[in-house]
Length: 160
Image 1 (cartoon, one colour):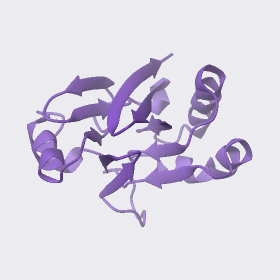
Image 2 (image 1 turned 90 degrees about the vertical axis):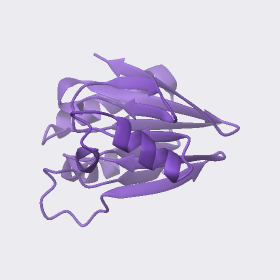
Image 3 (image 1 turned 30 degrees about the horizontal axis):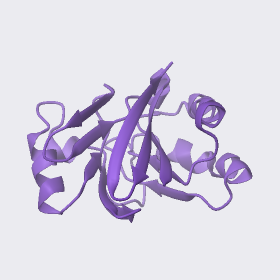
């Protein structure tokens, strides 16, 4: 089993991001993976030592959001964890503020079990062709925790 902490849209609120991580550790313990879905990746990078002090071997993954100017990060990332392929994106290139259809279609086209995204600041866990997970805005004290076991992905929103 693998657990992943998923964040997005921290928008310079790295104090909130660290506080969310502490809440996550309090409720779930150590994480195997930390994901930031954009618009605040500088916050995520500043939190790396904080994360490494708790989970030194964790995988850290970030993608570029529409407000991550100058960031040397990809727009999308694919990873496979415990047999489940995940698409990670900010979501703005898939017009997620209007519909989730394009993101769902792209994730299915890539053979993914789930798509992780942000941009809307609205947390959701929705099963379509794939599991769509938006952790909400870390600046507004929201995140998601994924559990991946035997290729199956489940998610829970933590909203404080």
